[in-house]
Length: 99
Image (cartoon, rainbow, N blue to C red; front, side):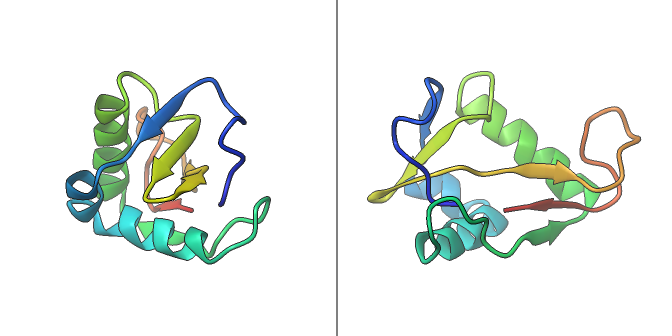
């Protein structure tokens, strides 16, 4: 969802190569760009492997965490990676979605 740029002390600027390497993230950011602040865009559903990889890549790219405000292009966004069926110990089992 579009976010207030000052809503979190933890921020991360997403560069084009990282986003284009993660098409699901690119889709979510595109949807959020057209959304209203405070309203989640339509989720993108991921399989467990993709959800785990995206979460790990975001944590690495954003230096240890992926909760906070993401800057991409000229916007500020919240991105949520939610596990719909917890159970694999990694937090993204059996059909994650991101929005």
